[in-house]
Image: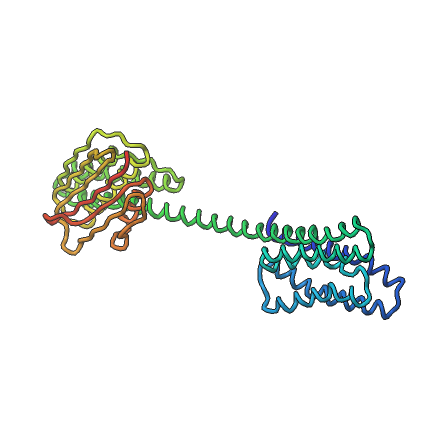
Length: 378
């Protein structure tokens, strides 16, 4: 049931209860009483139901009118004054309806006290008229029961609306999260592949005139990278991207070597679970992509080690342009600290590391190069 249907059902139930308390005595009075009595009766019911409708509407919308004290006072007077001026048993029919707005619109702690006081006064008043303990207790009990029924019905309607809004918010958050995932994966994955395609295309073009066999080899490698890029796009769309550190290091070394950058690889024999291993693989991909795009490197080293139960990855290259200096860190298990100084890819690495309880650091080396490190729990 959606919030609109729940609201309609709640309103219908409250209207039915409100009419039910007065319809039978009203019809009996219209048939048997004089015109003047019926006129006063209708005036009293109008004075009661006009603020009653306003209060029920406010309860359903969760608002409070600035005229609430005045309208609630009018409803209280319309409930008890006719009892004093010649309409016996008047409050027995209207006091239960008054209990609903009291519970819904006033602070609950004080509203409960007021409703219990109303029930006690009604019991004392009817007992003095009827001299019947059972009947007096029954009518006073209806004040508590009807007020509680009003409160529960309205609260259920409002909770239904709040849950509907919460579901809509969760759906929007899920869509946003998926958009961020696709954006991050396309940047980190497809950006790397496109960089490799450009480099291999340029190399093949330069080799075309004087070394045709090697150029054909590079074109074949370019086609393979393009196929892998297409596969990566399909994997991103399906939400599945299984990467391993060893495979990514192998691809990175081959790409660096083909680009004329010497690459030294030293992978320690460490066992890492799937999520941290994928985070390290993404770090290798992003680090190598940045080397190819933003540096004039001639050498690069990719090293892993085990430090007190945590896998440590370090990528170091030389040839960093002077205007590319940037330094940032990400706290373990926390958000992207210093993310304002990071490029989009490094921000993605910070997020991936934080998801597995790891850290990322990036910055210049004293020799004029650049160092990217990631540390994740094994």
